[in-house]
Length: 253
Image (cartoon, rainbow, N blue to C red):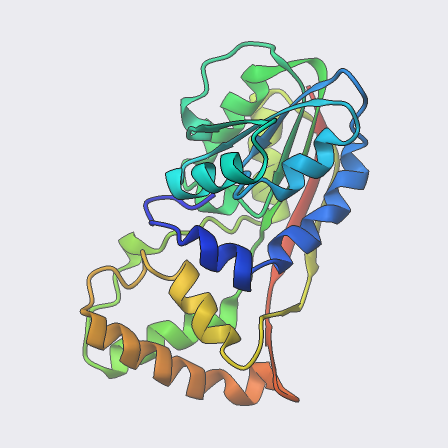
């Protein structure tokens, strides 16, 4: 799920399939059962929702991006997908489980999101989520910021689109909402991007909000300079390896 950015759903499927690949690990933790009703928050183009549905569970996918939702509906017409923000959920005690992969770090209203997830789960329902955690893509963010400042342009903190919490902070949010936290883990997950243009495609896909106040020409200069700054650290043997750090959580209502 991406907040306040327009997604290129085709680029997402073509060049960022690693999002789905890593999300498959979460499906094992979810352990969906036939007949359960499960909410997939930030479902993207529906690939993980489709895998969960293979268990016999009833899966409903939501995403703030209409482009993503339309692609998901086209790919998997037998499943239910809706354009909706997690902070706007209104159901009460409807779902047996909530699943979310690589989405909740786009939701800066984290307290509201956690409260809504608690609200829509049935008593005893489980929460299985993974999001970017503290330190996620730190070198990329640092390089973008340094590049913008070197160009004597404005780096706007208010346009930073992500929420990367520490385990302590997110654990507190979950407990305040009423969840019992079973596990919470922050771990490094170096992530290979797609091909020689991997970092540029990543920047084009995910940094639009951060660079929204710049011209297209300025954007391209930021991309070029950021690549140069990061090549020594993140580019090895023809591959870009992004410094991802993830927060994985299992909890119960």
